[in-house]
Image (cartoon, rainbow, N blue to C red):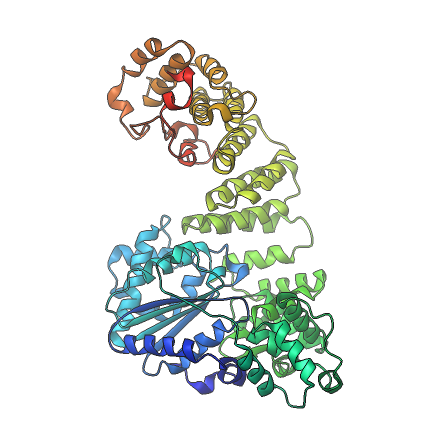
Length: 608
């Protein structure tokens, strides 16, 4: 349990000025949890408005409850289940009480055992079960700060849990800048700026000397009731600036002014203290032992912590905790590229490769001054482990970094292609375009170039209603003709269905009749026709010649056409042949990205 004495003074006192209403809501939540009920709540508000202070208040007031917490970190957003592991790590001694499938799914997600990529539903049930098991012993409060920076997998699982709380004596409280769609339906408490009277009271509470009324008015006006801005904008101001009546000209907007204030305070520290802050900022795990091991490798001792702590920038306790995410950002951004590389190198050397190989690989990548094949290969292994845990975003981040560190043109292009595929799966479409351009700048085989065309078509369907997709798919089908007839036919089918979907919006070379003519000349299948083959030949004949020519072909296999390859009620398809059997094209069928396709007659007269 957390006690008030565990919190720094600047959390316990000044930042809660003017928060009586918000504290009342949190007090009632604690009362309900102590009474055997469950509650979920999302605190929302701009950076620095006091959401973290309210979480700290809740932790202090939750006497008799067990309090566990996690905080999203920007640099860990690609690491699947990183935030969830942070929350659940203290509770894993109760893991054996879960049903076998749930226990195995959670162990795989956390890298505690090997196995296939865990089902997200099972992981969600496992976390709900684990928290409920702990809450049976003592009321449980879970605090999740900076929810907007959680990795996607953790955010989805915690939202799943928040919507399924019952009577488990459990509270789940998030702090976020805005409510993400995953948390839709969870009760929200908007944390707004302080009223003017409260802002003045807070300012008076933290100032030790007199202040000119005009200066006070300008500070209060510029801060717009934001507590962090009120506290930070007055730090380091000389008494003459506060009492002389000359005002504070040129105050910047909140985010810039506060961060620049942190940059200035970091720059005023001794060199060894700046180096220690940089190491702590470069590794968001908050593990003090790791930070001290890395600092020792750079010749920085424990005495370097005092100036940084006294400056109110960081705390070194059971965890390393920066006063604010902007303080971490300032410590990292204000360092030179060479110093950042040295910090990451020290952290990589201090990280146990058996216990945390992925974090070690990431630090090695950030430390690399240029291309490095050994590090790139290590990142590829990390990407494989991320995929096994069901984390496409993490796999994409590792693969992108691996491509950037590869010097060989063919190897760089291949890794960029793999990174693009994982990035599309993770939903980062802008980055995927960049990676495809990187892949095409290298040496690609015809097969790999066909893969590029397929992925560009996927992106076209997802981002712009698919106008460019039919021509891209048609080009991929032509490239595949001499390589693999079955894959070529599947690509022709996707091109034809894409052209039907795009209709009049199809770009040059993607007109449905033009595509149907090309598809009609597709190579014959190498084995007995399957449902997708019948669909290709029958649809192409219908578009080129007419209904009478296509229907007999389509009727040859009605049972197969009702299989998973076709959804009745339209021409939507899941063409499994496009990608099966070739890692270069990946496992996910293009049809999965197309979504429902309207009936052909509703889109184009050629299909009637």
